Length: 385
Image (cartoon, rainbow, N blue to C red; front, side):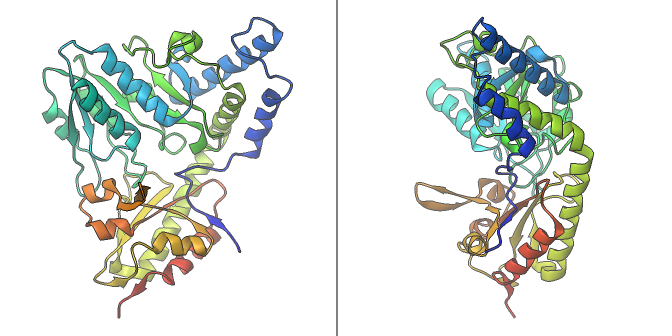
């Protein structure tokens, strides 16, 4: 069977050059970066070089980059770190959105339940956008944190983070953004956005899994996240994953080299897919991704059940049986197939949301992959009449 991978927003394949960059640190250069001998010094040099590369790519300084194990950990680090700094201070109000990744939503729910923080969740427009004026109207005297994702992992919709940061100029309010999906797909610069913290994950940009970074603007009062060591400038205890950090470094270097070409490639594939779907399904197709205000590599679609016939619980499974890997707006939690909270928040009914499909492109995808997907989909989702 021929396999077609169109789920790059979930994870990308590791680039061969990234793997090559990692191998020396899994073999001969295996030292601990905290050791003072030559093996440790070699690892330490790589660690700080990688920190420089990541920082430069997003417009930060090296001292503002902390390596973590995942984007989820980075979000936890930023949000809990600020919350614990303000614990019992009287400032206990957080503003976020109802369409955040679970790494943010679950963290905020934890702070609500265990530490009695008050959280206001802003709903998106039907287009999936978080309006800055809605954020502004939710600010209170005791608000200390706003957490809004830069781009949505399901729809690809990009939020106006700069306008949100402008709202809180001069206020003692900090702004965190989950930017995992945006890195390498947008011109993301922490200084231009004027944010306090942001997340970067290597496996979304052709790097290894299990390594990520958190940007924290200098003097942002974030508490230490993991205790037990002095690593990461005494902010995150634990021996650094040097081999994966070497891979992360190479992945960022490759983004620097390929950025314009990547963006053009993603947009071309997105345009091709959009045209094919419109021609095939006409008014029966629902695009949950904005045409202009969304990431170039994500297309999220649903289907009008009044016009098209399909089994919403079987679309992804049938595509998988045809060798096509895509994602849905659904997750399997405790054995229950559930519709995407993002898609229901923008107004889709439960069944329509359950049958949605997210297609996300990578560097190695081609127009043939798009054609294969559309042909397979046409055998699963058909006109009623």
